[in-house]
Length: 183
Image (tube, rainbow, N blue to C red; front, side):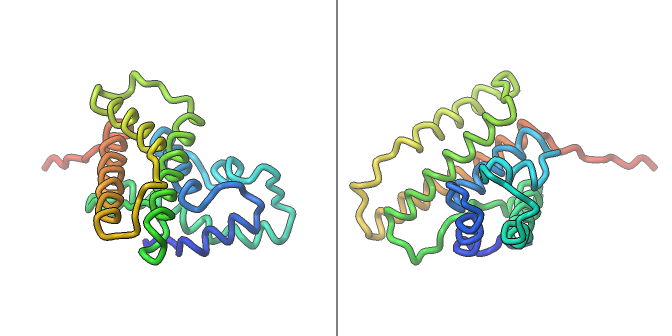
């Protein structure tokens, strides 16, 4: 299942008066899902929208797109083909904006983990190192980034590192079980 368009998710969050960017919202969701596979859409959306009122028709109309993002995220985190990706703006934005979205995604991810009462003992030393790396990513100075190929390549490397390490964390925190058949 494909993720919905970044801009459409951003518009939905804006209509719902969420202070979260689309990248941050996706990070929150992924962090929550890694620690609690039972997290549902309403629990996640409640974290994004302070004054969530499901009796409000305008808010209710926005939910299908967020449900699509939720379902696509659950599927991609559990995908054996490792197709998980971060919800980020496309290549049409300047490098600084792209880097800012990456930082917001990581901030959201760390927040999502914190929401689920994370116990560090569940992770290996490598897993804990990944979380330290994420904390460093949130401190990146992006004002010095140019809008050139080298800067974009650096951002792409960080995105790929996050993508792979989220899958690593998922494997540590929610190991997949394989059913063996006995004949």
